[in-house]
Image (tube, rainbow, N blue to C red; front, top):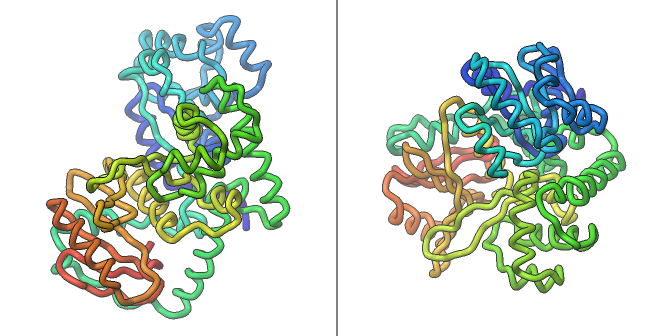
Length: 398
């Protein structure tokens, strides 16, 4: 497979550059940020390089003024905190859009001083790991958006069943995706030994170098790996800090700090739990990274979370909030998305028939939220309307 893919986020970046003087592209290492920056700018400099940082630190204002390319692409900005006050002054003097395109593998806007420097001057775009359709070179699926925005499913025209040949090939690619994920520099490698080596080197770099930008900790790299592995065991379920503490031998206060740091590195995404239970829920950003840590393919619910989030984040003007629904009585919907149009709950099911507990979970969810609907996503080829608010959808539609 060639390593070049058309990225869904590119259109959002181009739109942001037309309206804001500074645009930030944030995301996990190896998601393809540098490739996108190079495609959108004739001049890219990497602040990951010590000599480049030294030039900037001598006189940040002069450094920017001597580089006239627009946009000027500044890669891995988390390594140059002196850059941000200079950017503020530069766009104060010249406020035209499209001047600077920043990237970061650390959520640098979590720092108060940087956030205040760029307030009102920065538009952020996140580059997620590639979705399955993105890897296959297919257009972005708007299906989750269309189903959420539909008033109900009674008037929704159901497509015909997916052709058998297409369905079999999709399931084959799905299994590959659940093992390899969507980091272009890794999942598109042909040899598994190369993927393994890159994954291990990448995690070591993030946990031993990048993490210490955010968090001062005396913990060894092996101990930090142990914490991440313990969190991986709870992927997609409510976190129990006592279990993670027991597995990793790290105190709960330190675990909470590490959880925040892992999220700032785009290793994980922490969601709120709604429905009566109180605990954070973590999904790994990349299915392949989770699979490498645990030795197992990621779950179908994890796959759906990644694809649904990508659909909303890459669609212009679609702001969404993600959460998980779980009641003390046992009802649960693992992937939930909320917009101004309503709430959509999504659950993967293995078979074409629903169990009583799955039906009860859907009914609980629909009762709890006004303007809500539920999708049961299965491995078969057929669409089926269960009710005007419950729909069964083949996974190949994602």
